[in-house]
Length: 173
Image (cartoon, rainbow, N blue to C red):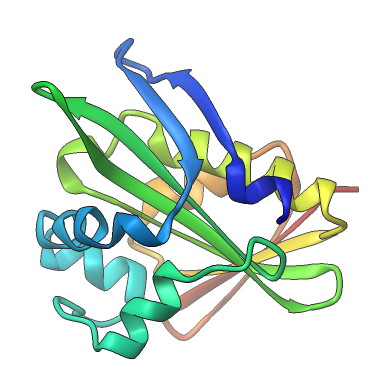
């Protein structure tokens, strides 16, 4: 089993709140679906380039059953009251050797607290360690917060804009 499948780290967000960044697990199904349910239509549109409120069983299985080699997924878990909840997640999927597509979704009430930045840092570290040389992402131009996460990632970022999409390539070298 790859090391990434057991990944766990604790971070402090901008507001001082603690967040656990850890590997997504198949048993996170209900918590992940609950997070989707608490995410606005606008945020889901920014993530999927279309409104996705419900997912088929096959889509849910795809998102949950990751191999942590070619498909790596991390979640950000915070305490709400006395119970842990998923506040967001990020993943990358290897599209060809050395190259992976990266994407994030953050529950609205946790946006702007640094969760995307923290997830990006941890995903990039795993990617680099496993031989990924560049991360790519397609972002809607109005998703300024996500564009800033990528621009501030510490990676060498190149940007290409076309009809309604910003294509980013982030290289480690």
